[in-house]
Length: 176
Image (cartoon, rainbow, N blue to C red; front, side):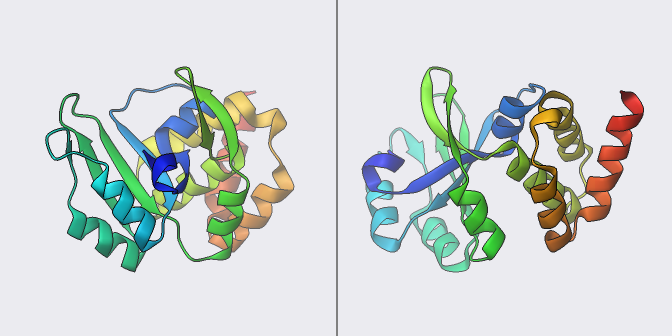
């Protein structure tokens, strides 16, 4: 539906950390989206009220304030958090770096391992969560040797998460 509405997006959050790291279960989907008002209206019109719960007002407010809104599939209970891409350099770079990945037989754009780590570190800083840090540790464990460390170091410093990033690297080295 996002493609049909003309909305660029990328899979992020726990699905991205599972893809790049150690799997864990979740019943919500985090999608970073880059709509304009017209494409968001097309998306909302394509979501039948009988099948999906979504507040059009919350969606439009999320777009204005660069926040998130939810879409819930009434048949399955699955929730998609649609996160409006932030208007900052890191978010633009992160979005431009997304890569295609096959998830349950469907090819979707997904955040890179490095950007998943950085986003998870930011979330952990904003609302302390062991789950976010475990996700980062899982990505480090599985994808660690392929990570662009200079990119991570640069953005961790820029985003104010360098101390957490260094702690997790130190812990990963101790375990190996």
